[in-house]
Image (cartoon, rainbow, N blue to C red; front, side, top):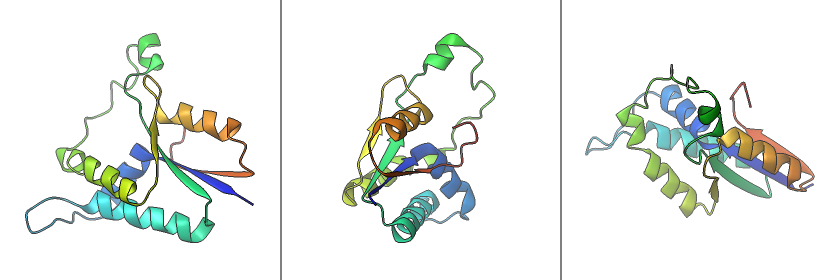
Length: 133
């Protein structure tokens, strides 16, 4: 049975960052989110042997924000120690030949739901702990 895994990029990134104690290189670059993303992705591959993994990233902007100006206003901004790891995590996925998808104006949840219901795979696993997904 062919399995598709849809990985919620920012959900997993935050889990990795906050779930692993701060780790840094000799130069001071924090790498705990990178390490966490690598180990969680490796666990998915080991435990589920997916035919394909696709990482879904926010596409910037949101129709929800247009409809409701207070949408996510209580969220704190991303810590700089996490922000500095984003491009390195993306580079890791590129090196692993794991594609990343983002759709302008759409949140990852919407893209994940659309792909999951329309992709035609026999089995779809959604890698996210987002409770409103």
